[in-house]
Length: 102
Image (cartoon, helix red, strand yellow):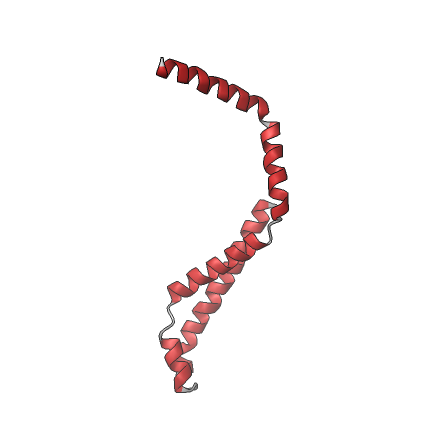
């Protein structure tokens, strides 16, 4: 499921970048066919900032689809499954602390 969402994210990002590149490629041709106000807006547009904005927007959309009420339950379940390991790690840390501070 994780791979599917990552591939979906990058495919939408690639589509957005290709669309922006097509708009930039057509900008010189469109320059003669649009009013001056639109032409001045298009001259100040930077492809790098457009791409970064597209990536941030897609990231926020992906984060917004997460089920935030489910995260605490998953964290607690993850800790409960690994409870024995954490006990051993804490025991090792206590023994190392005694050796270091003694």
